[in-house]
Image (cartoon, rainbow, N blue to C red; front, top):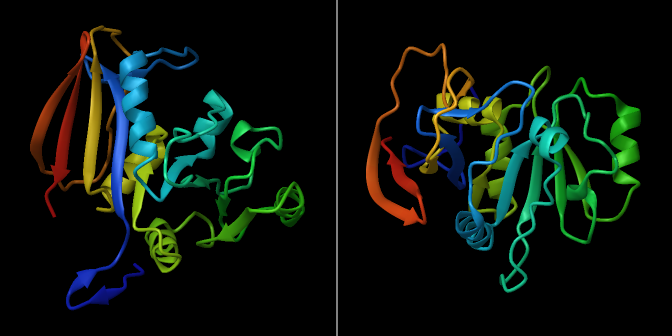
Amino acid sequence: MFKILFGGFRVQPHVILNSAMSLDGQIGKKGQQIVFSNRIDNYRVQELRGSVDAVMVDVETIIKDNPDLHAPSAAEKAPVKVVVDKNCEIPLDSKVLEGEDEVIIVVAATATKSRTEKLTKLRERIEVLTSGKNAVNLENLLWTLYERRIRKILLEGGRALNRRMLDEGLVDEIYLTVAPMLIGEGLNFYESKEKQKIELNLEGILQYGDQVVLHYHVKK
């Protein structure tokens, strides 16, 4: 696996995973959209976006939720929007592509060239970046972003991207909103075939109305 080491340490941006789930550990149901965060917690996420250099999601999140990923207008600078999109399937009318913010669409080498060309012609500051052959190489991607002076990234999903980032040891912090609901069978927050366990240090517990946010650091 691709690694850049300086003095025995891997150099990459600091990655903060932010997610939300029900009390029984589900982040949603197939074919059904469930809102977990309240207005106050949404404000917390906005503040997080304003504190990082980039916000990263996968294309499934763009297709499902169509977020704009904007930071608060009071933020010192707008974070770069990074979309992991192996096959370059992002809809051209996605909100994340609007405006003047810098957007990086990360594809694999197998992505259709005609699709990537359409994206780059939409407007300036939309870039298509290739990382990996048949799948996006996340570690290589993080090093490339680090080279571009991106030092802190907010990871906002979706589920598959979160799992890969955790499995590959690329997450440093986790903010996990726990909503006061039980939804039964659904999509687990974390489900992996990897055998190693991921150990966390609890840094704090925040309360926003009837929701709590658990803040962890990932043990390395």
